[in-house]
Length: 100
Image 1 (cartoon, rainbow, N blue to C red):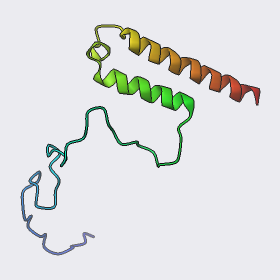
Image 2: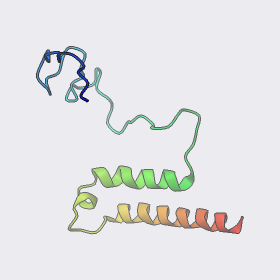
Image 3: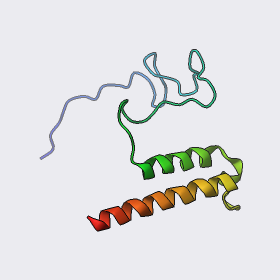
């Protein structure tokens, strides 16, 4: 048995066409953000664990460094240092969990 929900409403505008409520992702901020500034992705007054902070530092660098972004190259010296720091902190955190 097929249920009939009634006539379909015609679309008011074609798919993919924005309306006045939409935000254009290419619109700039007013006023523009200063270089090197970004909003934290966590609530104010909270802190990430040291391995998470270290990975965030590495990811922040690796996404803007042309050397690190090139898949045919190894990481640059700064990227290598940040990645090593992340691995060391992660290993230390894991070892601390194993002891408890």
